[in-house]
Image (cartoon, rainbow, N blue to C red):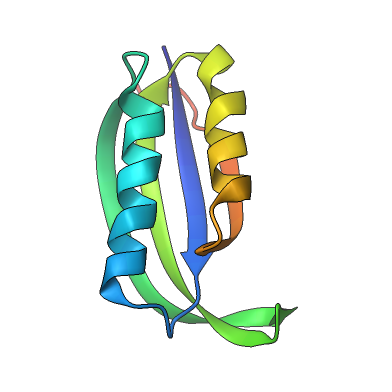
Length: 97
């Protein structure tokens, strides 16, 4: 298992149901093959550096998790097909000692 972090944002006008549904789908994609979620931080609304899909703000969430490298492609696919998630980024975290 390797340590990763996922940062994504949704439309700030999205309903709480849409946010919860996106989070649940991400959680299932991470934990389906034995991955674990270390922490979830809701960053709230932030101004975007440039317009994305006619949005100037995004509602950000940061997830620290551990998963097999082979499962990252499936998580990326899930994020791409989820309409609520406007942009996302998955990066490898350094090993904490």
